Length: 162
Picture 1 (cartoon, rainbow, N blue to C red):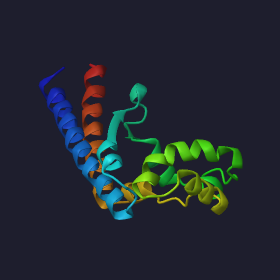
Picture 2: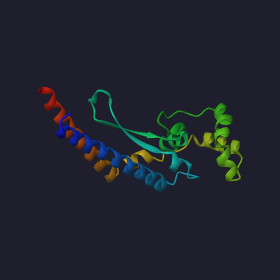
Picture 3: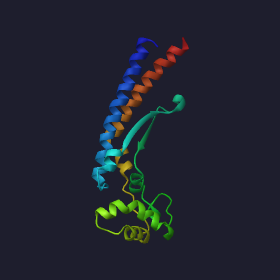
Picture 4: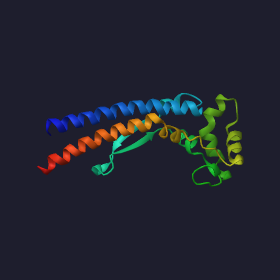
């Protein structure tokens, strides 16, 4: 690797690290803005990862690694969810199990909470990810990282032609 290619690669890696740190802060802000956390667990366990796609065909993918709770709050469930399906009554005991800690902290019966969710048709989506991806900070960081990646790739292509 030439000095120029190494410099471009280092610029890309640095921009990737900065973007990852800033995006992690940004998604935590989106979680707070949507007021979807009961404790700080979801906020503290949600991590944004930026990865190179295999084969360098597409420069970057962004993954949000988080809890199941985040996925349900973000995308909704039942008739409000992605598949717009009715939640069967048989799922109430399973839902109650997962809602137990939250319901007990609120002084509620977990089965009553689960039954209420099923009767309403599900949970409405909070669209945390949409809020995050549409933020100016997300777009500017992705543009910066993609630009650094493109500069590094152009140097690599020139080097491989020689």
